[in-house]
Image (cartoon, rainbow, N blue to C red; front, side, top):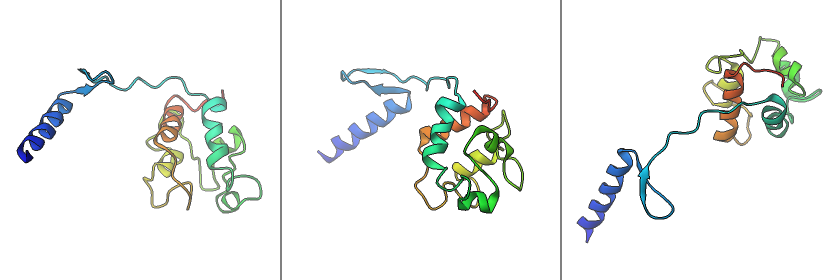
Length: 136
């Protein structure tokens, strides 16, 4: 029985490795690649994330603004950046400090001492920056 379990696990792993996945109707189908990123807008996609996850610290009179100068109450504040420089480099999420910080690729992570952004929220911010970080 133990060998049978190992074989079953190995078989499932091999099928998944070949790009196959088990569908809801218990049939096997080829796995599909994630859909390409759709158009991301500041007003509908990005600003709600900033409101819910960042404004507690990065609004007028809050500690994030006092420390860094980054005010996320609107698009202009985000694009103005910090007293240390810009946080968004339109078209390049790899070097934009906004993305570096929320993805945890720096010595500190934002939001600081709070729950991390979800994978979906991080992806929205990354796509928005890569799409040019427009005020739309």
